[in-house]
Amino acid sequence: MRITKNGFYKLSEIIKYENANCKINIDDNVFAIFFDDLFLTNSLLESVNYSSNIEIELWKNSKLEFYWVLNWKELDSNIKILQDKQYSELKVRYIILSKNLEKIKSKFYSEIGASNTKSDIHIISIVWKDWLVDLDWIIQINHGIEKVNANLLEENIFLWDGWKVKWIPTLLVRSNDVKASHACRIEKLSDEKLFYLRSRWIGRDNALFIMIDSYISNMFICLSMIDDTFYKEIFDNIIKKIK
Image 1 (cartoon, one colour):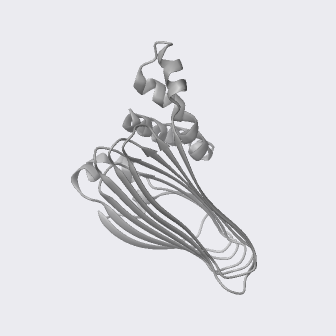
Image 2 (image 1 turned 135 degrees about the horizontal axis):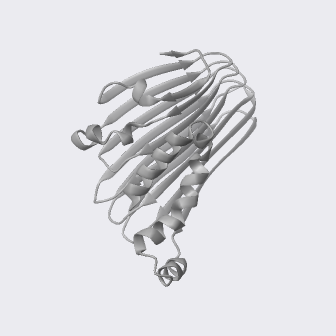
């Protein structure tokens, strides 16, 4: 599929099948925003172990913002993004939600093969008790290119004790004139702050919601400027699952 016009695209309009293989090209000078809304279609996710293989290629001077939510199912997600034309820009914002002894597995591969490109990837895992997140995220910067800026960040927010997170943040840098970084942050929501809120007669679920509200807003607030109604729908669905 070719994206030839600037705009906002829901992946449910592109990916039509339960186990999807999809290749997307974003034309020169196009600014596209993708959102995976499949977690909103609960009838699909309740009935199958969903898997997807998505490959996206950014052409010259194109820009992609990619927003994604992984729900708590046995999901297997594989995404590959190629930036082999100059002046392309990639922004990824990814939220992972899971619980109840289930596993989420995700592989994301970003390959930069042209000069004057940017890649900014940020993942947040909201972690319940007794579950596993398995992430394999890679940014590769190829030989002979310059003026590249690449960043890869994961945050893990723990709501309970007893969790497992496996993450391999990988930078494969094969050129000299680049700025590249990767980091992993781990945080358990403060018991002191939780106690303070509960002492104000706020239930535990609502207290947790208040504490993680800012994380979700910071990741997805840009969507409110595109379609505020859709943003509120996304936000409400995430909060329901958190509660």
